[in-house]
Image (tube, rainbow, N blue to C red; front, top):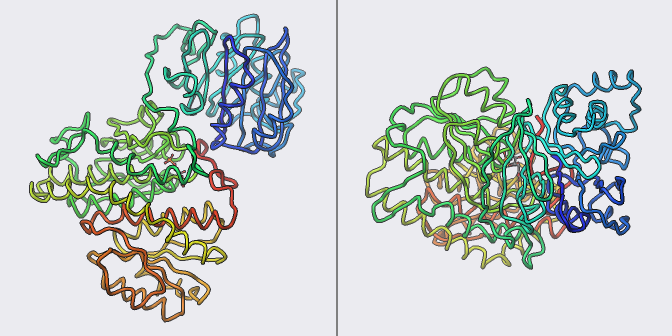
Length: 598
Ligand code: F6R
């Protein structure tokens, strides 16, 4: 939920920490702070609000080692006192995660004479490390972590010594020349190095300028493997776009191209995934998909695809509900999470695994926690996504799910070689078709501008288009703050139709398919209540325009693939609506990109 960074090297630490923190602001942005070792003592600077406000208050500090934090409040209000780093004696700590037993620790430490100045759980950790510190920072951190229940990614500064540790919250160590870095996520430090070492749970790193040592919680040394990240820096910059979200919407053709690369051969009509074997498919009789938010919406489309293409029954479960549902999952459990760190999804997957089936993760982040919890992982390869609202990662999730459903369909004998070849040829055309839709964005903007003052907007669709209606509504509400509902169009008459009036714009996703005629009827139902209707239709559709106020056309493709194209339209509608309302699009209020608390 929060972002942490650390630097130990030969350059001034402050500009590097501030720059890296700005790249982590998507994880939280209600307060920020840094601690720098300078001229024999540690200086701490904190402020409420975004990194830019903190930056304005900073003096020139020459120190070469320090830690930093950008916060998304969990324990204690978002203010300067509760901002990290938290200090105790010579110890400064930044923390991402939740210390569940902090109340007990707080009482115990208070009895031992420590004074608390903030409402945070993290301050208890600072006092604990101080309490255990006897000239060896690694020892003190290990002893403190032994007392803690909960999740953490931490960086601890004591003099010019820097230590990092993690459990259930992400942390990566960047390896440079005579300088090393700590960050919650790769893009934060990609400008400085591509060489990364991913810390695993219960591992501790001692980070000096010329050496990094890794330990387990018994202080036994551990060997770690360094990975070279092939994302380039441009991928983590806005590159002339006004917002990351708009840039990421435009990156979808490239993201999909990467998702497909090396996995499909349309000539042979074949799909291959590293580590997945066709014989495993034969044993799958039911699939349970577990995810949250946008990833859930992708999972819902996945359910339809597994059922329609592979004839395998699939359930899709909201992760935070699945944990307590007591329902037994299918023989394959698929966890979908772009970050790979969503606490609800991780917890639900762990629960599902106790039933003994196989597990598979679809994620964008190499080495993320989810990949360690499952039998197989499929990487989405979207590149870094900085905007809080997921766009290109949703598209890549869909890309993976289409491939997976076709792969399972082939394995189950439900997709013929001919059908497979045709589908793969059509899939390959999707990136270029998305580019065509993007070329038409000004006309989509026109409708967004027109309806941007609405208080309520409905997105409706049936079967494969229903998940896209949900995703359109989720995108719109999170970035424009307009109340939006995504509905299965056939369900409107069972209640929500009561809300439809001439002031309730309806976005109807009505591309050709099994339920097209029924969808036309549903559009007539809302039109009869005088709702302004914008229909998203195939370019060849000549029927719907008779009944609606506006049509947005997408290129014609195989019926089953059109949700990928409609997705781009609902993303652009949401983006331009939020822009017309001057909303902070990349960092919507109360939200963070990676939700590492349950
Ligand atoms: C919405 C959004 C969230 C995430 C959700 C799950 O735009 O981004 O709804 O989809 O928090 O995140 P991941 O995919 O990282 O598990």
